[in-house]
Length: 134
Image (cartoon, rainbow, N blue to C red; front, side, top):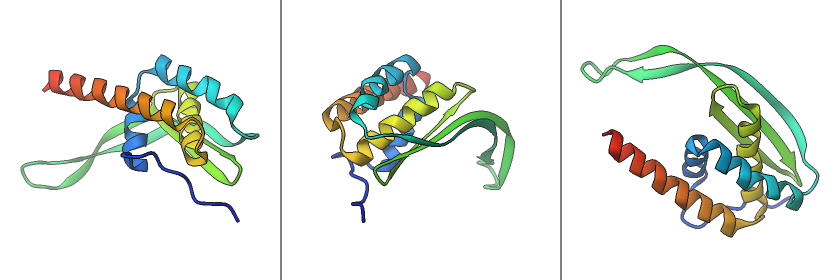
């Protein structure tokens, strides 16, 4: 029996995936590349592109509807009884796989300090960009 996935201090799994999904493509790939060598043998469960429905809510009446479809890239990997998952907007399967590698590394407790530093930096950059947009 394997232990459950490890977590990063101050980061829920949902928060981590949300930040990784919006992280800079090149920076995310640069984080994931050295992690691969530190992980046990990885098995790819799937990687694909596809369309997903974009749900929205009408703020005036509170009704839900689908605005349209969005092209997404998805990757699922496993190693040592843990899974890694990545889903990103667009057709870049490499960056979806990089996201899954980081998710798997966190679940296995590999390079947690590097992952936390990356997430903290990416979250700060995303908050700054969101503030500027608003």
